[in-house]
Every structure is written in C-alpha cells, then in structure tokens.
Length: 102
Image 1: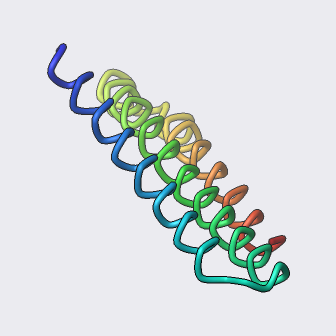
Image 2: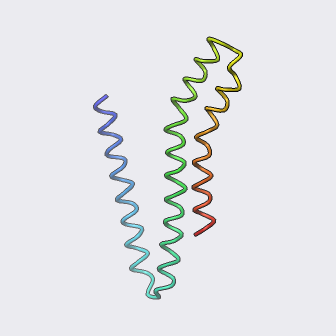
C-alpha cells in the first residue's frame, strides 16, 4: 500500500514537472504578449480536461464495483446502479466546457 502512494506521488511530481517545462518553453518562445496569453489559455484548458478525466476515472472505479455488487444482490436495482455509475461522467462535461470557453 505504501508503494502505491509513493508511485502515485512520483507520477504527480512528473506531471507537474512536465507542465512547468511546457509553460517555460511557451514563455521563452513567444515574444508577443497576446500569443503567450493564448498559449496559456489553451494549456489551461487542456489541463482542465485532463484532470477532469482523471477525476472521473478515479471516482467511477469504486462506484462501478459497488454497483455491480448491488445488482448481484438485487437485480431490480439495475437502474439505480446505472445512474450512480453515470453520474461521475458529468465531471468530464465540465472539462469540455472549459475547453470550449477558453
């Protein structure tokens, strides 16, 4: 269990490092201020969509497992399990909204 937390922490550090390197590269390449603002807006929208997808995946796994167990015990609760499984997918819609607004 401790190794999983350490691996997760290391992957988060690698992602943050990659974001910083990309942001530094964008800032170094673009001399015009408007182009830099547009690049950061696109970078922020991509990060919002990516993190929304990761959050959905992390939340949907345990919910799906619980829904399968619930349906295995009582098959009349299929619709309830389906609704609870589909609820986290709305988080990705907020990520897409950020992409289209920026």
